[in-house]
Length: 153
Image (cartoon, rainbow, N blue to C red; front, side, top):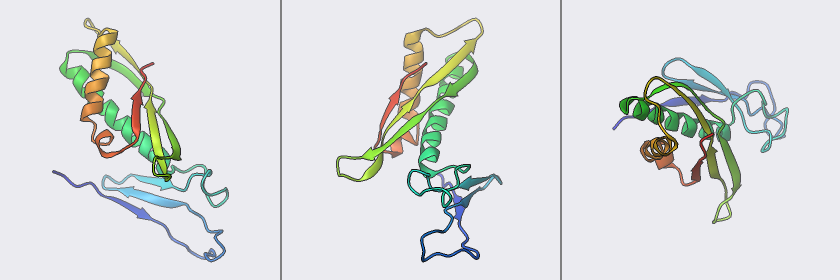
């Protein structure tokens, strides 16, 4: 068991609040010192109250799932004797109404493209098995209720 902490901080400053025209921009601070600018998605709260240059929670969830899957994929590939040179995932999340009628991330599709080198290279069935193992092991995938699709490029 382990704990993982993030500090999310928003400061009103001298902007109004009751008029609903306040900035949704805020900071995410992580224990290693990284600071990421966060905001609501412009599809939820229009610009300029949303910061289009910041990461919104929906994007962060998609990125967290993709990152978790990739890290397990790299570990399993290495253990199986394969050398990965490049891994790029163009992951997409669909925000829609779920079966209860609530807005939710209903489907997240991972589209990893992986380049291998070395003497031993996996065939398509082995790559599919590596993705399956990675999905089964991924902590984030095990934590959400959205359908997760993996469509290797």
